[in-house]
Image 1: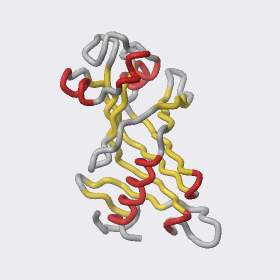
Image 2: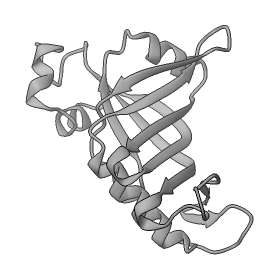
Image 3: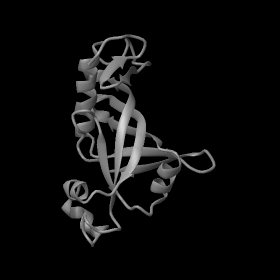
Length: 163
């Protein structure tokens, strides 16, 4: 499989999924998953989320910034898991950029409120399957395609092909 094609399949899957799971590690080493509504991925697959700076997930990310995102598009027989790092961002312009009107129910003070912050996720590894796009081995797709980031390029795990 071509890494460029796989990135496009992954990006398309991320775009159709309205929600994903954000998985962090708590202080006792247990994985914690919560449903999140991401903004559309950037061309480099950076993903932004609105959040409360006082949430448990923010405390967990401040302690260990390695996280996993899990997306699914069941109609297509597709999933994408992204592993990478997350950071908490409080830049006012970015907070305004990454705001939805329906967020006012959670953050009535608006995007510039101290109660609203952003999570920025940067992937370093991607696992994906997409039965409809034939991103799975025959006959049942038991092995995902795996891409790893090398600087700005994506490579198929175990190869030197670039996207």
